[in-house]
Image (tube, rainbow, N blue to C red; front, side, top):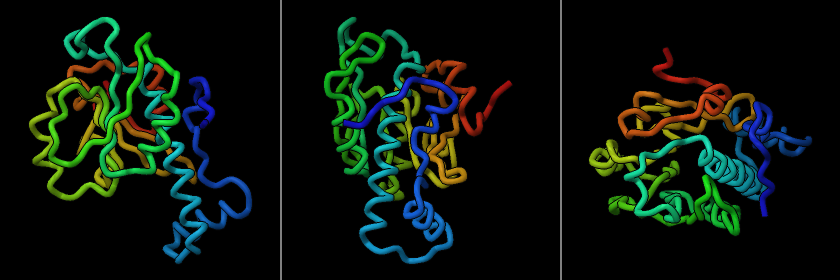
Length: 200
């Protein structure tokens, strides 16, 4: 099971993607557009998926959903994953036996175009196609924390966007997107974000 670290400025950088000579070489080659051996590519993909899954779990304690987002006091927080089997697999393992905000946790696969009723967080992997904009438009004002890998950055597809900075998986946040969804984000989360859009 992936070890989940407590929140701190360092632990938010849970995924130093380059660690050790082989991973540093793999990352450098990736950034230069060089072809990596299949095994190295698979290792980098698995590492990034693990890091993102840890982040998704950690985000849960730093987001306040409106009461109407839950059917009852003991209703679970449901995390959907669309477009990334790797992240879904890692997340499913992390959530076993864990809770957040006193609630049980569930992971759910989501297919593009599917209704998002009952979800509290949705991670959108890079494999999602261009039709996702129309799919997500009707859900953007629901209390769902959208997390993406969108090249356009935070706000383009959701509240939080993953980005790679100096070999580390980091994230940026869009406050206008959070407000539109009726979500409140902890100042502790914002303090360790790479970029905060709409900060006063």
